[in-house]
Image: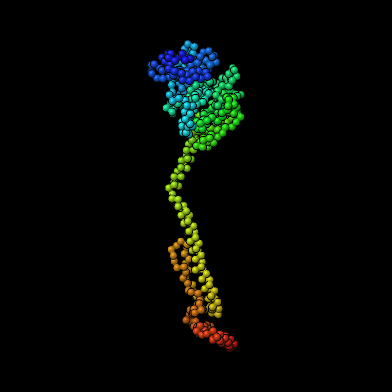
Length: 426
C-alpha cells in the first residue's frame, strides 16, 4: 500500500505509514480542514474475514461514545480498501511507555482507573474487547488513556471464540486459560487486565514461552510468580489484587472490571497509609536522642535499687536495734523485770519509718537499749517497797563491781548471793 502515500481520502491527506499489522495498516494523515493530524486504519477488501472484523470494529466504536475510548471520526471505502479515521495520539501506546521501564504504583493506578472506566462502559453495552494489551492502549500527555482497537471485540451473545480455521483469537501473552475450550466472557477481559497490571509494575508479562502456543500453555498449566517477587516495591496488598485477577478459575476472579479497579485503589490506600505510619514512627524515633532510652531505663533501675536499699536500711536501723534492745533489757534485768508490776518499764518513743522516696527523717528515736551502766527509772512512790530496796541494793552493788578488779568483783557477787539467801531464809 505504499502507493497510498500522498493520496487524499475525503479531506484527509495521507502522509506516511506508521505500522503494519496482521490485519490492517495504519497511516498518518492530515485533516486539511483543521490542520490536525489523524490516523487512517485501512484493510484490503481481498481478505473477507479481515473485512468482516473491520466492519464489526467500525460499528462497535461508532456506538461506544466514551471519553476513554478512541473515537471514530468517519469510515468508508476507498478503492480496494476499507478505512476508518481516528485521532492521532502523539505520545504513542502504553507498550512504547513500558520500553522505558515499569511504572509506579500511582501511575499504574491512574491508568487502570481510566482503562477500567472505558472497559466497564463497553461491558455494560454487551461488548467484550478480547484483545486487551498495552499496544492497544494509547497515551495522551503521558496521563490520559484511550482504549483502542476493537477489531476482535464481540458481543456477549455471539459465540465466535474460534475462527473458521479453528485458530484461537487473541494475543497469547494476555489470553485467559479458559479460552482454550470456552467462549470469551467478561472474566476473560479481567484476566487480561491482570496481565497488564502485572506488566506495568514489573516490566514483564507473567508467562512467556518460546512460541505462541508454548506461551498459552503456560497460562493453562503454571501459576504466576508473585509480582512482589520481581519488584520489592510492590506491596502485598497490590500483589494479592493482581494474583486474584490472574486466577485460573474465572469464578475466583473479580466479578467486574470496576471491582478490580476498586480493589486496586483500596490496596493502594492501605499500603500508602501503612508506609506513612512507618515513616512517621521512624521520624519521631530519630528526634529522640539515642542515649535517652538507656538513661530512662537506668533511672528506673536506680529508683528500684534505692527503694530496696531504703527498706533494708529501715529494717537494719530500726527493727533490729529494737529487737536487740528488748532482748538485752530482759537479759540484764531479769529480777527487776519479773519482780513487780509496779516497776515502770522502759518506754519506746514513737518510731517513724519513712517511705522509700519521702524526705529524709530521723531513722528512729528511741531510748537506748539497756547497757551495763543503764539505770531504770523507778517511781518515787515505790521507793520504800521491799522489792525496790533489794533492787536498789543490787544496783549499788552493780556500780561498785564496775570499779573493782575481776577477783574482787567475783567475791562481791558471792557475798551478795549469800546475803540474799540469808535474807530469804529469814
